[in-house]
Amino acid sequence: MAAPWKGAWFRFGFGWEAWQGPEATLEPQPLREEEEGAVLRVRPGWSLVALTAAEGSVELRGFGGGASLQLPGDCVAALPGEGHVVLARKAALEAWAVRGAGKGRRLELDPQWRRPLAPTEALGLARQERQGGGLPLVPGGFVVPRPPFFHSLPASLRARHLVLGHEHVLLLDEAGTLFSWGSGRHGQLGHGDLESRLEPQVVEALQGVALKEVAAGGWHSAAVSEAGDLYLWGWNESGQLGLPSKAAAVSQGAARDTDSTGLSSGDAQPRGPPGADFISIQAFPALLDLPQEAEALKAGCGSRHTAVVTRTGELYTWGWGQYGQLGHGDTASSDQPRRVDRFMEWGLSVLDVTCGPWATFVRVRRPEEDQGLSGAEAEH
Image 1 (tube, one colour):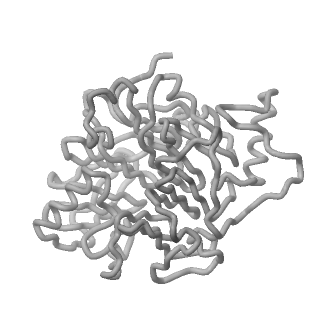
Image 2 (cartoon, rainbow, N blue to C red; image 1 turned 30 degrees about the horizontal axis):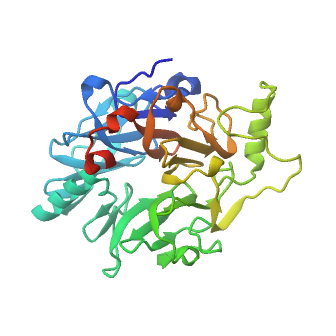
């Protein structure tokens, strides 16, 4: 089957056709039509997704119809939530309420919150957007798409990357040290307990490990080291940590009722005997070995699923799969990494991944497109 090549990003899971039923988005779909131009950044929320185009324009789309919301023309970045969206504009950061439903969705006439930006700060945010950084990090702190919209950071923290979970925050500083804070009731902070933290605290279990990437899901977290190791911790309700999960075992059992082989994709293997120990919470970061000793490059975390890109351009997913967000052509959950074979079948190399709560967005490239690219172009 030939790849429906219409852009660099694909999506699967809960999406624009969700009103038709989960089967509508089981197959990876191009995020944008080819004539619409290339997408540089994707920031998904619960029912909205922000797209930053290569030429710098910003688009905000709603699930369940695909209609774009009208944004001010000077936006350089957007961070969507459920009822609000934070916009980075050329003169200010603003938070706007989203009203209506379906194709009638719109922004309110005036922002609910505004924080002026100096010209140099706005230029810096636009540059970070092109380079893969930016929101939710902003000058002096970070923003979230719900009140209160702005949170300051200690001046001593030189943040390189910051990600938001549903109830927690992960920050990677310039030295590669990881900090976490917020709710810890599912072990998502990685401090070995279920306590919450009001202020950033070093994740001691990963001190001394040079970290490159971090991701925060609904109630779990992931980190990728410079050496390509993958660490996971937090809630494992649907197997999103790659550890034995009762919910995933039930889901896999139902799937095997219609598949006599017990295998569904990639390198997945049937789990252990009935009655095996299940793990609900892992409060310390735990090293997870990917199949065939693959090395991790990037990670994404959804509400209860995880996706990882390897250094060889493959994509592995696991966890909750009810909306097809794992990309295996079904709605089964999995408590172990399974390779998404479709991109390999299409001859596409996976470069990047980001997860919405119930969806997965994947950036790809044909291997032959790597030829002649500069280092900066290959990175983005």
